[in-house]
Image 1: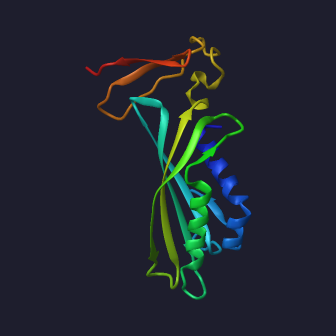
Image 2: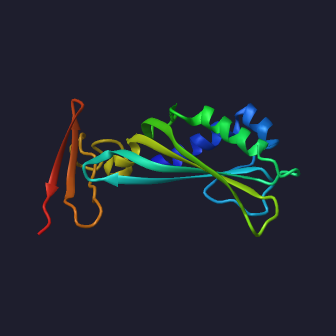
Image 3: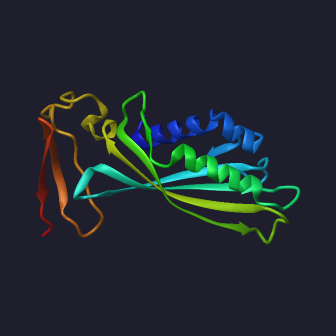
Length: 189
């Protein structure tokens, strides 16, 4: 399993099994990526958008967004704010440990939470956006050939080839040995 998929799975299970969050919501209606507009209210949708930089191809910083949707009978914002409060308690500066070891040092940080938006097309539907940072150290998806170190015929410490966004140097080799990284670059012509 790749690192982002494993992190999504870990966050999903962590939120889905929290009893207090389920009490606030009255359900366990949590989705990764997309949710149908006809979903039972309230519901949570979260998504992770990773970005790699050529300077730090092993450490990944992600934008992490959680959307909370609610349609209370009384149009009060009490429930959506209780859900947001519980998410902050659960996730702000939380460290995730993945059983498969796909990534290490996974930590979430609250950046901001947004105003409650009212959907003009749906009466009493409330929408709150929370923005987070998520950082982790890549491990599994760095191994060349998809297998264990050394299985691809490369040196056991070889981790792969990385290409930064357009216009940057191309990282051609990244080695790690004795907890030190060595990066070799090809300069663009």
